[in-house]
Image 1 (spheres, rainbow, N blue to C red):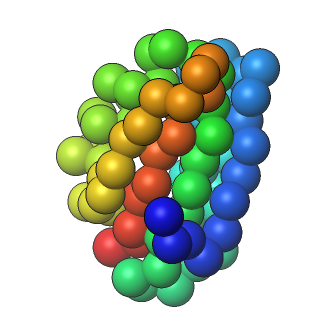
Image 2 (image 1 turned 90 degrees about the vertical axis):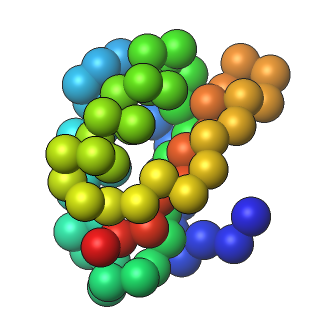
Length: 75
């Protein structure tokens, strides 16, 4: 998985992973990618909704052990 920036939101619950991702995406240029590591199960649906609402592209979601990995491309 290629990405331009990574943030780790492990241990944080909704809405903090989304808020941190929003801030990190704002620091990226259009087309750059952000990898978010989360442990909140709800982050799977939260990041799907976030992508739809903001126009950012949700490229991939994976579950690795207890981690949920989200890859977003900034619009």
